[in-house]
Image (cartoon, rainbow, N blue to C red; front, side, top):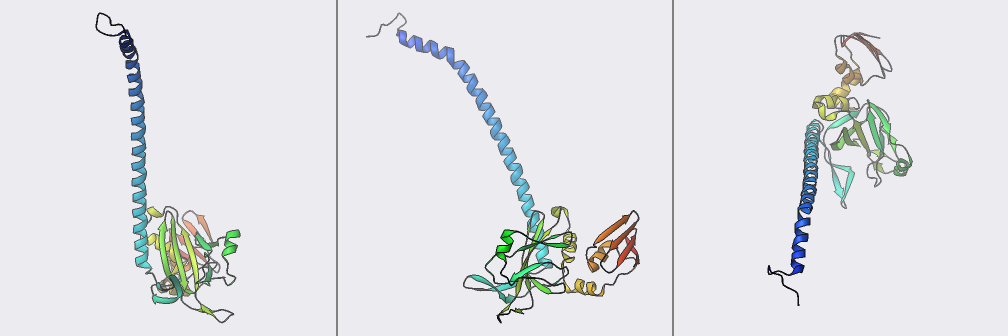
Length: 270
């Protein structure tokens, strides 16, 4: 039986109470400091999460807006579906018809089940994807699209600084086996600071590579007049191979001509 002191408490209880009184204040202070630190970390993480989410939401909205504007300029073509697969050789609803303006865009038979080798457009030039994976995608019936060839747009999306097109030839090609097929191409335009550009500025970049018939006809005629702006010349001739900048005077060098600008307007053509 435990001994009871004059205060009506056991010695064991008194020891427990004394231990609690000596240790509790320090433990509580430590817990409060730990809790405050944890709370600050949680709040910081929450603020960062909200900032990233808001930024991503704005970027997505900008991408969607640009994509919808471009789709209005280049109405998509719809193709048939056979056995739950797209049949690119069967057009169900034709859209915009564009003309290819630059060489080097890789294309493969339209209904291939393999990935189409991507062609990147950088500064108006077509650059084909290279390497081992690209070689695996080649059906050995592939070719490059010819300048002047007409194509449909079957897909269009915007991601970051990229505008991605899926193109489909209007004309059907008969292969050596006697089978007729369209050709399909995957083209990615790399446009720095895309989200800061206006729709017509983006379209001008695209028009230098694939353009509607009105622009294509102007390209064919290659009509350059004194007083035209640099953008008007690029819409007709595409991007120059070289630019010589002499301050107030600039020279755009093309394969078969030189266009001389003074104060950003055509002053002479050689």
